[in-house]
Image (cartoon, rainbow, N blue to C red; front, side, top):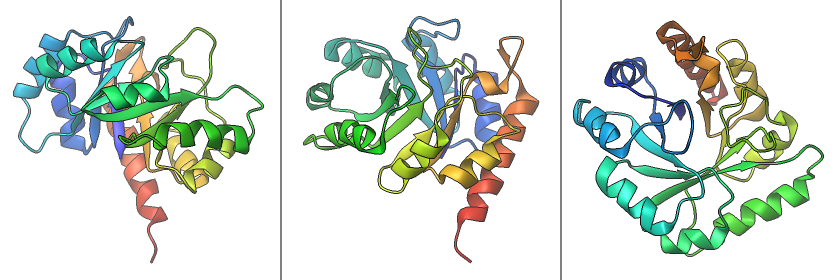
Length: 216
């Protein structure tokens, strides 16, 4: 799974889809990349039926607010990227990913307990996105996560690696961590804007690296 996050217009959505992105992410939380649910719906209507999965990134929204966002936008997956608690999943009738940021020094046992709490629900989350921990920030920082910790977690859990990935390092990250997927936002930007050549390079490098993980 290759996710390009922070999409704000249909041209970039089409481009990412045409190059093989498995998911495109839309920021619904306060951010320079923020987009309205109505605008997401418009973009998705202009994409082909076999489009990438549409992931809506929310931060500390109520279940009712999330329901309304899904209804208006038409997203396929809700990515909880704030300080939500695991019991919130019980209140959501949607496919959910959870972004988690582990502070430096977190042990494998501590991290596993956190992930287990999210996967123990009667409505378990579909994937865990592990991002870099930056105080007061909820992603898109360009900082790199602890790949050694994430690699150990990826042996057991459905992990999507995020944080500081670029076309230059994503191949090595995939080889080292062996995640179920990768996520990028600032790593494919130039001067704060998404850059099509970098998006293409990121997708190409990711696809090649995932291909090398396959047996045989």
